[in-house]
Structure formats: structure tokens, C-alpha cells
Length: 78
Image (cartoon, rainbow, N blue to C red):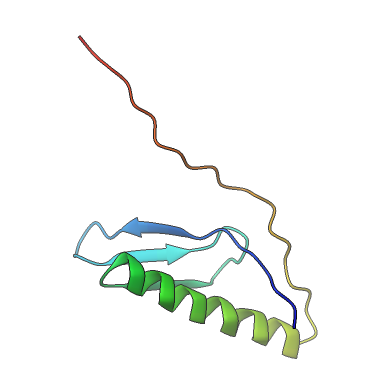
């Protein structure tokens, strides 16, 4: 069994109460869910299906290239 790691971005949907998930290394591989946990679970399923399809087609599985860096930044204003 091979294990692959991919960055996943989960964003709050602007127009409803759900969350949108995507991976910068897997264009077109997206998912969504009503909660962050549901979006993560569905994204794991989407990534698994995406990689399975790439493998079946004989296409290369992309490498995780660390394209995204997210951190919380706190600033103070007077």
C-alpha cells in the first residue's frame, strides 16, 4: 500500500452555512460539507477517487509541492 499526503484547504462558503474543500496539488478535485469534519471526510473520499482514476488511466500521481502556507497572524492597532 502506498500513502500520499496532500494539502487541503477548507474555506467557509460565502453564500451558505457549508464548507468548500480543495487541494492546490490536485486541480479539479473538490468537495464540500455542512461542517469542517464533513468537508474533510468528503475531501478524503474525493482525493482517493481522484488518485484511483489517475492510476487507472496510467497517469502520474502529483507530488505534494507545499504550495500553500497558512498561519494565523495577530496584529494590534491603537
